View 1: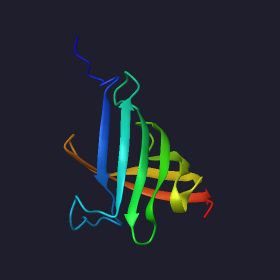
View 2: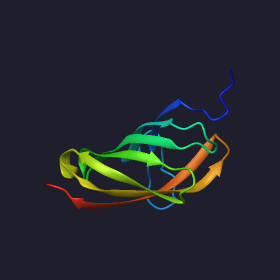
View 3: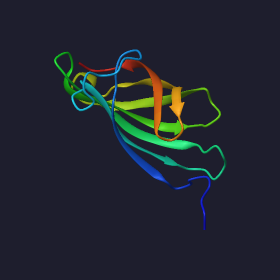
View 4: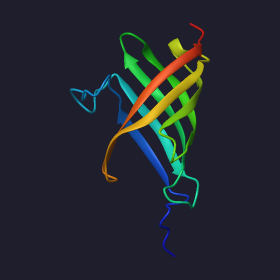
Length: 124
C-alpha cells in the first residue's frame, strides 16, 4: 500500500548550523550542529511533523554543551514556535522558544531553515 503522506516516516539528521545564510568552511567541522529526528505524524497533505533535536555546541565560546528542542511543525504555519526544554553546560536547564521558518527548499534534497532562539531561563 502506497503512503503518499509519509505518515510514520522518521528522518534522522546531523546538520551544520551557521550564522545568517553563510555556509560553513567545512560541513564536517562546524562549531554548532543540529542533531536529532523528526517524524511525520499526520496523513493529511502537506504533512505535519514532530521534532526532537539538540543544538550541539563544540566551540571555544560555549565549550561542549547543548540545548534541546522538541515540538510540532505544523505545515501551514509560516513560523513555528518550538520549545527549548533543557540543555547542558552553559545552557544547563535552559528554557525558551526557538522560532523556526522555512528559508530555501529545493525539493526533498535540500532545505534551509531560519532559527531564532530566545532563552528566558538558563543557569550558568
